[in-house]
Image 1 (cartoon, rainbow, N blue to C red):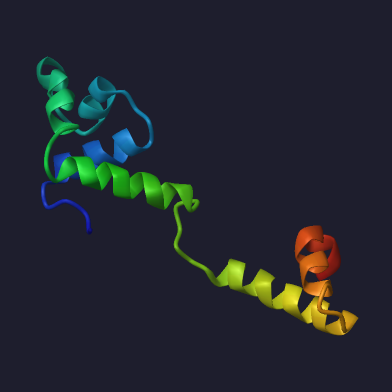
Image 2: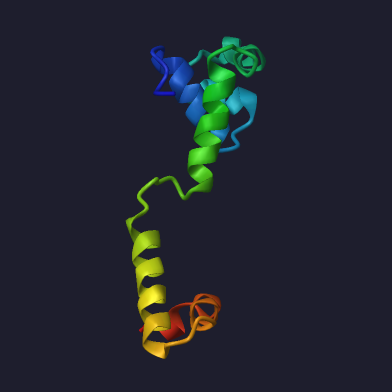
Length: 102
């Protein structure tokens, strides 16, 4: 799913995904103070609800889907295991983290 076409809805979803309460998220998204209770309706909206879940998932990845650092660490681990010439070395290198990779 991409960003919502309605900018206030997208802003609300972004704020809710970052754990802002409904009223605070509505205000931060630009809704007037008197309509800040609209957040409870937005949380149930057919497009906003899945967007909030999608943003939360992306945030659980650290906000980035860039896998280059992960792949780099895996390559270093494999290289370290290869130098040790042991099948068990891969597990040992992976479990020891960076101290084996330098």
